[in-house]
Image (cartoon, rainbow, N blue to C red; front, top):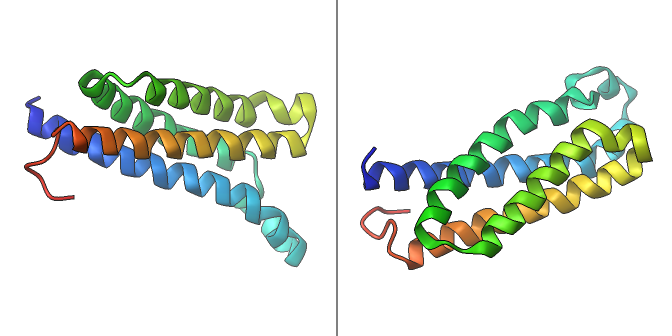
Length: 139
């Protein structure tokens, strides 16, 4: 894969990662309000824990791709650290925290982890742009 293709792929993965992480955070914030407003939502896919797990199948590959390409280029350890903490936090929140600590702690972990991932993706994107990783290509 040539450099231009890698940069387009990394840019796409950063955007997917941000959208998926924000979706996860909004889901956590808004679902209790929506459930209180109408109990029919609890019977949908949005009310199921499987929704978080499904988002992980989108978030993790996008993060690995974006950070793998970006960090190889700019070698920023903060991006990698934020990304790893964010991914581990989301995996824990989506798999074991609900059963171990309850829904409130799961929601807090999800929001913090999603925020860390969004910050990491935005920093990754900006560092690549400032390092002229993709200065030949429009945003």
